[in-house]
Image (tube, rainbow, N blue to C red; front, side, top):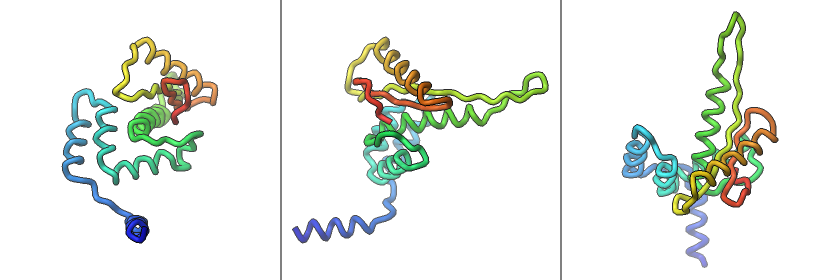
Length: 153
């Protein structure tokens, strides 16, 4: 009991955990591929407790104001990618006939563990349902749904 309390006390004081070099190398290799796999990146990140904690802390912060907590790195990465795309599109202005047009875009993201089989039609339907939910929440939104149709963002 005392050992557990001592460990928890020490762990509570740790503010900065370094990223393991092996994880950093694997992560760099994964993101530099011609077609990076988001699930693979999430799997690599989840092996590093420091990166996992930072990512989950960021995605669950008030900055994103999500309606439910994200608990896996895989879901967090998917949401962060969709959010980054949404922000990048919003920041682009298009000049047309002496006018400036700004764009917004809503995203629907389907969440599914990589070890589950799902047909491409079912996956597209999940993403489509998420997109309709995002649009129902307003313009320029991201929404993620899991296989059961539950919001996972």
